[in-house]
Image 1 (cartoon, rainbow, N blue to C red):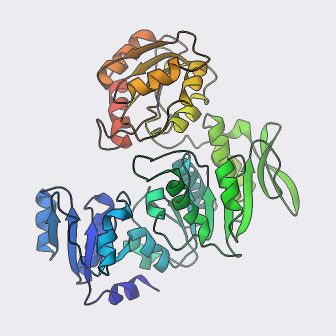
Image 2: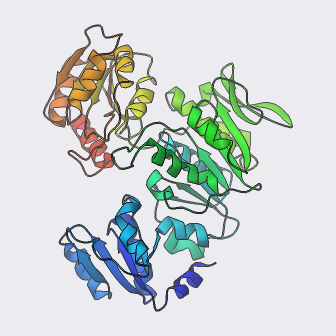
Image 3: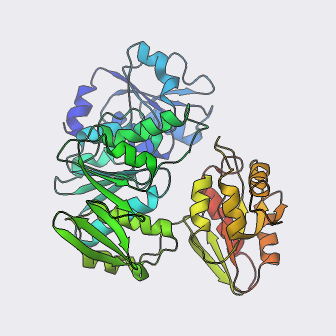
Length: 455
């Protein structure tokens, strides 16, 4: 089905779009331009100029605390962050619940390569997209990163590649899987939004669930959950691992990443060529190398790795000042992500952490903090939980832990307590929603504060 054919199928039907955020605005414009009966629903009571513009374009508005009550439109586009349970009554009344990404999977004319997991999604997705581009492919990057892809689907050629990052919330109601699926890892995450860990894993498994024998699944062999899920797919399976040698996939030998399949083994990428710090980025490269097999030459992989400096807010070097290196890892909204960040550095770091609780245990983080941190600076709602995790760990040896009221105080304290050769790392292990709209805003505030320190 083409995009235009899908839009024609909506003629004489009513459509609701839940959430008038940046990602849904192109969708609203697309539906309104097609002359459809569209209602925009948002928990905000006033959309200001945006709301006025939507109404001029013929859109109905349903705003405020009751924006989800009594919905009965024929088709309802769910924003990814809204749990499907909030639309169960509408579905029972006959509404079809879908999303921008679900329809994109239906109408996309080119192969789709999708990445999901608990950690490493964005870096791995970016690596794959950039490697394909470096090899001469036309790539459309979207999902959780890049731009919404549905409105431009008709301009995509069959020889292009769509590379998308998918969250558990996007996957919860998906009934299609990509041609190439990458599952980086799975650990407790977003348990403040999901009913339990089982629901979270079930959502992530959708990336593999509908694959066929002509598709490819790339999974982390070292992660028990992803290894188990891989056994259920009908697709060709490629694994990446730091601890063994898979039948097909990437592994470590000496100081290099190797690839192995039925044709033999070959060295692909020396670790010395990887500019990004941390063993987790070695895993990200292994996942990406598996995903682009037959599409990107090994030489292109090596050339790219020598110059790629990473993605913003992901162990991003902000500044080196007076011999102190400041890193922004604001993306680290879970303990496992912060643990990976801490293990990226050979020296002990000054760690800035804390934020909003997302319902996960901080206990596993405590021992890693004690092993890799020389000074722990905390602020936010999870400060107490992170402190307890460190102090109650068996390897606690009196690590200095200080709590501050806000980020300006945290940066000022870190500056006063660090010296030449030190690393200061923002890696919150928590979501940003106690103080910021998202992790990007949190990272930008941190960077502005660090760059504002006098020479």
